[in-house]
Image (tube, rainbow, N blue to C red; front, side, top):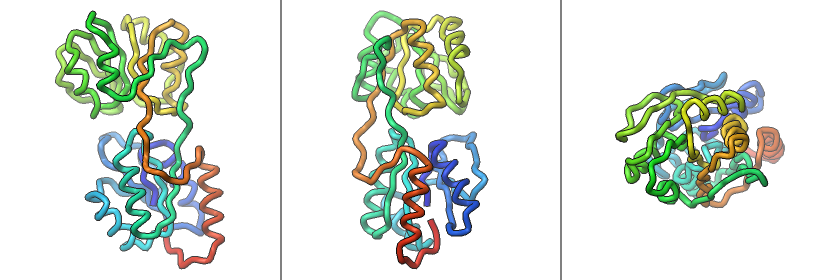
Length: 249
């Protein structure tokens, strides 16, 4: 079972689906309407908390659980850790490294969304944000700013001065720079996702000397972690080589 939400999860599911040693299913939370469906078995929807995930792992006789959710999906990672512990299922987290600030970057690192909103200050600014649809409501505490929100799906935010730009990465540096210049962006608010597909906005911000309010990753439940699909495959192959009554992953 792979808990998805990242390109790594989709790529890993597709790699495993072509390997006869494994039976794989990729699980989507279902919060995004325009899913990038894999060439692999998948399911959409929650489990009903830890109990539901425990029941699923037992019913499907899963022999490994891979957490390839977004680095900010702290609740799902916690549920995965607890369900794995209760069922004795080997657990692996696949998580790309966080972005690191360069010498020319103008980052202000904050702990959470409320810190990001406070860091915007009182004078009105033109803000570009890619924090995700579920986090946008935090900006209601600072309605004086003009917000350009980029999200995978179109939605109607409850903000007075806000536009939504529906788009999915990967994005290119020159296109990001042109967007920021055209929209007269003054500050960027971003989560430290670490994904290569969306790093271009930080490169464009560096070129334009724009400040970036960077939201730090939450502390996740402990789990053995690798940074790539290749290392996840190596972990699974090693697990597969051990004696087991494996039926699925």
